[in-house]
Length: 388
Image (cartoon, rainbow, N blue to C red):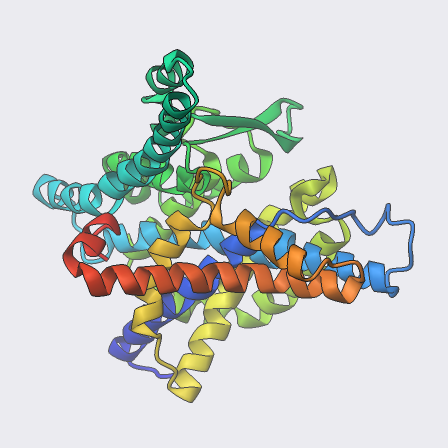
């Protein structure tokens, strides 16, 4: 690895950009939501075709990919306080002004667009069929505000250490819960800055305990996972720590531990079981650092450069791949159903092909749409994508 501070900072920046596209692909694989069974309860041989298929889906939808959103929170916390180590309210106002453009406005738009499409389709059907529009308009008025905060709510797998059930919430466009949480946490950065500078490592330890125990408030937008990783990123930035340098320093610890925990999480199907639910936080922590080490090493050794177009397309892929749409449910589901009509997936080989092809084709369609939109109206596309 390079030794100068400037080189390490540059490699860290390149690593962050390089990771964006793989992380977005991980998010799509997570949303494939395949049916799996933990390896302890599996009634078939793990080396059988069905067993291998089950392990593949656990790996790519429940374990390896489980670091994606947390890594984005870590990066977001770091970037918020990068070049902002010394607090000022003027600097805070500038940062929040930027987050309004990059987070709040696109968040509102990408929840409002599908909502209006759904309502519009309902009104057209009502009018064309000669039906009253009362029900559709009631849906509009009852949900126009809910779509931006808590439109979906479901009970998560596992409980906290006190035995209380855990719940997750999301706006209409489900993946955008990340943007909701991120903007809320950004507003709370004065508290985070004060806590980081006063409590230092004790803050991270306290939040880590809350993270692994899940003993925390369940107010939507203040999820402990979101706050923990954002705060760790802030801690690195405020104290001028470098992710790449840190990961390289502790690589002989984080790499083997991450590998061991990956095996354990795969056996217990990620967070889909009670045991896996308690193991996976440790896996995510070590694996994020492992990914930083592996990616930065490849960049440094082979002079790899992030593809700027793919980096700029990541946001559009993120907001569009499971955005609710009339008739087809969402792009990911549409692609999945279409592929299965062409390739029924009766054999395990066909099923596995469909499993890998669906996210790739979904991302490719999103990228193609993004390219066309940027060609037709670059300013409008940049605006709806948060000036990216």
